[in-house]
Length: 180
Image (cartoon, rainbow, N blue to C red):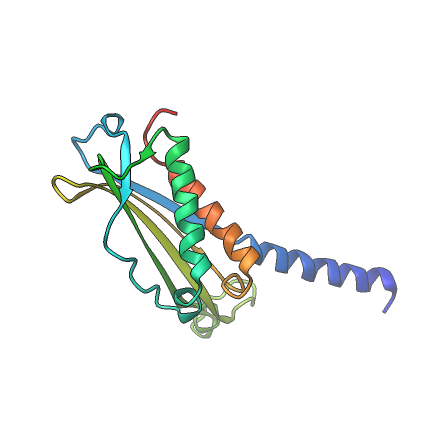
């Protein structure tokens, strides 16, 4: 095989790996009707501990919780919220979850719904980060933002994990309806 053709194969493989690393992240949010978020100015972390993520690699990683909280605090500060020890206007808490998902393109191909013969079964790690802002008086979630996406290879690489947390939290807070 000539070197140019070999390079083309490797370039294609590299592009595929790069595309998998940049897999899409779905980000959404919810706002409770009747709440004016501009009247809230201070926050504190909810006293409830974060629940287990479902993945021992994250649950035993002390930097995961630290990184996620630091990113949330930075985003809250950028939007004019001040962390306080006094009774806060808002409580903040998060949930994170890791699970394995199955993509069933190969199974679909067995039943004639596979396009262009590119069917395969793929098992991958998928993660969700959910951030709640809670009215401490009513204990009602008044805003919830979340991000979901593929996490393959991220959990075992601390630098990638931190980058993914930063990306997810930033994109979640972009959906917070509050003037800067």
